[in-house]
Structures are given as C-alpha cells and as structure tokens.
Length: 438
Image (tube, rainbow, N blue to C red; front, side, top):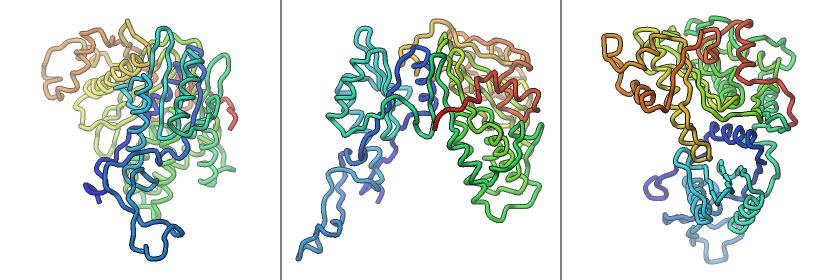
C-alpha cells in the first residue's frame, strides 16, 4: 500500500541523449568504452519501510505456518526496488570520490589531476570511459568489491543499441530491433519505399476505427524506441503517436509504410566521427498550423556536437500560434532550452564552451523578435517563458544565425518530405547505412 509499504518509487535512469553524447565524446577523444552488468542489482537495496513477506515453500517448519519474514533488503517485485538500488549505488560511487552530475543524475565523474573518469548507469547496465586505463581498472575493482558485477569488455550492445568502432569513428544502430519489427509486421517480403511518409500527408480522423487497436499501439510503441538511432523516422512516428487512443485504418496504413521504409535499410544508424571540434550547433524549424485537427504547429530541432548528431525532437506545440514567426520563435526557444541543458551536461563531462552555441533558423522575423527585446502587437500575447532565448542571446550563451530553407536540417522533423529532399537531408544528419554486427 502506498504510504505504508512504499513511498517514493521514481528512480533516475540515464537519458538516451546522455548515452549518445558520451559515445560521441569518447569517440572524439579516442577513449575506450567499457560495459559492466550488475548481477541481481535490486537485491542490494536497503529498505527503510517495514515490510513483511510469506516465507517461500520449503522454508517453513512444522508449527511455524503463521510466521512471516521481515525484509531488510529489497527484492524484485517491490515498488521501491529500483529506487533503493540506485540510492545504494550512488552512495557507494560517491564514497569513492565521484561527483554526481546535476544535468543527469545517472552520470558520475571523477577528476584527479589530468586523469578523468566517467561512469553512466542505466538501472543495472553501466558504461565507463575516461583517459586513464589504470583509474578505470581501479573503478572496476571497487565496484566488484561492493557489488557482484560482470565485465562485458568493450561496448558492443547497450539497451538494444548495436555499437561498432573503427579508427574513423563509432557507428550505432538498432538493426536487430528493426528486423524484429519488420518480421512482426509480416513485411519481410514487402517492397521497400524511399520515404517513411507520403509527401505532404496530413493524418486526420477520416477513416474507419480499427477493430483491434492493440496491434497499432504495439507497433507505434516499438517504432518510438527505434527513433533512438533513427532521426529519419522521428516525424512520422511522432504524428502516428498522436492517435494511440483511437487509431484508424489510415493511421495503420501510414505505420506500415514506415515499416516498409525500414525494410529498405534496417541497418541504418548514426555515425559519430572521430574528427570533431566538440562545438554545439543546432537547427530549429516549425510547420505552422501543421496539425489539421488542432491547428497547432510542430516544433522540430536537432543538435550537433561538432559533426555528430546527439539530440533531436519533433513535438506539437502546446498552443496555437497566430503566425509562422510565432511558431518559429517557439521552436527557437525549445532548441535554446536543449542547448542550455547540453552545455551543463558537457561541462560535467569536461567540455567547456568558450564560444556561444550556434542556433540556425530560417525565419528572419523570428530572429528579429529574439534579438530585439521590444514588445509590440506581434509578441505581447506570447508567454514570458518563450522570451528565455533573449536572455541567452544577451549573455552570450547562444548566437542565432539565418539559414536558407534548403539547408534547414530540422525541416525533416516538421513535415513529410519528398524523396529528392528527404534523402540528402538524411545524409547531412549523419545517418549512414553501415551493417554493424549483431
């Protein structure tokens, strides 16, 4: 019962953006990436609540049928098990001199002179990297003394993401996962298509409701996780996820088209080059009143660390924008917030940015609004939090630049493009079709 048997159950897990950022940084600085696994992680957590359990069969003795056991350690199945495990782990790692990041609570770093070591944990999977192999070995020995861990060696497979490295860089993909999606959809023999969504398509509620929506929800749910390494399908998957509550036949047809697109390149993924200046730059865009049902606009942005794409998003805005300039201005604010958080994260990772992060936008009116803190009829109705970007421009954290619509990389995150525009843009994002071992 909540409040008696457990109180808080939330447990931090590493953000996928942090994982990509760490891989890009390790690749640029040519650090080795090691992976560890904790055996029976949830059994290590200490319990603060008073919890009793019925003894398992075989442990009861005659005459003790009514006795129960009080738990001092957590067990799998308890609501607070993951939280107590993370608390136990974070206390142990901080006792060894590691500092917990405020940007991502699953990230721990330690600096000793020129030596720098990084640890990232996702439940019971751990990534370790740094510039000192002796300190990394000492960290592994410490963790093994505190918990039972399994050293999996160099990073190859993490959270369903396949990782392969070379002298030129690191390639991540979800080829095995994509093939499973194609197989489950029954489209292994289907003809592939060049784009994940028909050009200019706007989905609405015009066709018949699906009799069994569970298949649609399962498919779209799996496609959402595939966007971890596939920015090329982010926009269509975002649109499809809007109809999870009442999917229709046209939505299912569009979801299957995404699968047919995957059929043509299941091993496609992101490439992080080893030649990287580690400078932040972002592209932001919006599709004004793109949703035919609500007339709300779609925000899209992508963030690069040097030449490596580490963050992207496609999201419908919360309110209706009265102009394309307003929609673009809201998109700029969203991208600015992401850049601010990434600067905090990279600072914890030892990457200091002396120069402002570059933010590219293709709307001159929105750039003018951001650069000139003057309220007039066009901006007086906009919420105050949207003007956050003005402060960041004035303090030198962010610098805005104009980019033509033909070179706006975030365009792929706001609308369904045709083949002649879509394919070159995918390549510019750093998406490659390289077969990586499963």
